[in-house]
Amino acid sequence: MPKKEIKKILVAGSVGQIGSELTLALRAKYGAENVVACGRKTKPSKKLKESGPFEWADVTDPEKLKTVCQKHAIDTIINMAAILSAVGEKNPQLAWHVNVTGLINTLELARELDLTQVLCPSSIAVFGAGCPRVDTPQETVLKPTTMYGVSKVTGELLCDYYVRRYGVDARGLRYPGIISAETLPGGGTTDYAVEIYYKAIEERKYTCFVKEDTRLPMMYMPDCIKGTIDLMEADFSKLDHHGDFNLGSMSFSVGELAAAIKKHIPAFEVSYEPDYRQEIADSWPQSVDDSAARREWGWTPSHNLDSMTEDMLTKLGTRHAEGRLYH
Ligand code: SER
Image (spheres, rainbow, N blue to C red):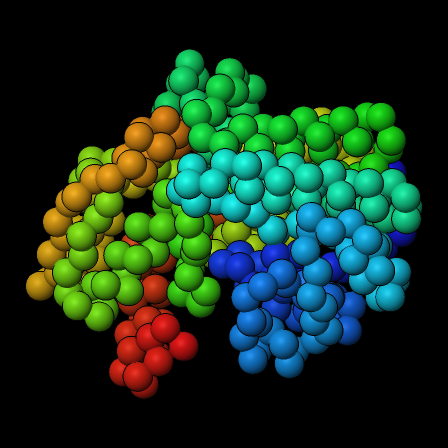
């Protein structure tokens, strides 16, 4: 299983919301030349492109992936490439292809090239009907209603299968909605929790696509990065779970989020026009029980709604004042 120290990491999906910040954090920790960013279509930011190696490769193209891995002597793949829930409902076949075939390609490469580790995130979207929605347990019924959720349950099972069947060190964690000030999320149901901050800064008003009392588990990006790297570094022999750790941090309704922003921007107004994403949000947990992650690899989040809100508004406010809110 764990064979040697991590030294050459490939981040697939490095141009996305999480990948872009994770790649920079990994470069700071392991050395810029040891972290290869990889993207499929979207142009990388200047920061991402100039801070270390960048390659064009699509997780659904195994030959290209293999060439990139061999060129850079990669021993660890972090697979952040995914089609999220809202876009996935518009194109379920694409979501399956990217999220499942893409993951199998990375797991197969791990087997073939004897890589040290593959990490691929899962999501709160694995949950659906039949499980408790408050403090949703680690082990419960998994009956997702979105193709994104179906693909993520499959991904968890695949990671666990490759651990058991082939001895591949595959790991994953169920991210809640991730909130960040750098790269915008694309195509998820939890995107409102990011958009709301931009609109508060820009227009002092926001029309939300889910109802005021919609409550979901959320996390601020610094905690997401910390959790991901902590899991990468966790001692494999201490893990009972592999591809499916619940990861909790905070849980709030849109009304509570708006109230936290109003403390800083009293004129801020939110209106509500729920669309098809309401049904997706209603099928997910409101909060999760992450005691397995806490017990097996010491997970502890640092941010709450108020500390996150203060930091988000400061960062976005500064950029807005400099005329580059969206970079
Ligand atoms: N943020 C994701 C989505 O909304 C959930 O993992 O699709």
